[in-house]
Length: 306
Image (cartoon, rainbow, N blue to C red; front, side, top):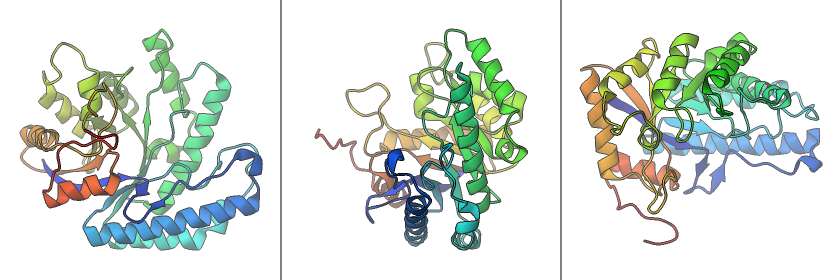
């Protein structure tokens, strides 16, 4: 398979714009929520226009683009209030063949033991599914992790399955699951995706951090082939990061040449045809993505030096 689109998440450093502007919960009001959402949507429009000029057609929208949208105190009808702005972004995305996604934050835990946490997660997923389905009806999706193990992985996975079916059909349709770097490895997530009929996001850096057996490369072509199959003919999306020096799981500023070439090699081994999209998870955001697009891959640098 060959690479189609490269993209990055939430913030454009070159423009100094974010889709994640927010405020303190104590200040929540319809007026402030509307002002902040309007700015986030305007920033999203500017970022997407800039991305298109640079040949970047994949982007992750911030999970706080509508601040506190899932909170019990939130009352703004953002769907109606921003219908025109959302429609304008949707038209731009569709006209230019772009692809958007969202990634609910770390506290969105669908398999939690605490029912309040689960309820909060359900509401968070629902509003983000509503937004992404309006911004990008054809390809837009949500990315989440399975969650915690809580001392019993089998029970944790069963809770996830049970709570997954508490989501609306639209939210279930938009959901994708990603392997993580500490708890649920790729093969466990793949098995769950196959049972739930949900696409899997393969994160190669997470797989290197957490995998069965001593060698992360063992059986990788078969694993990748099965991951692609979960997309059922749609263009699959993968994640790539490089390891920050001196850490085990932290992301570096840029993607190294070795890591980029390595992933492309593995994807070419699984089938001769087809395309995939690749989300760059690097501290330097669009600059790291541009470096890959331009073939200018700087040595792995850290903001702290080295």
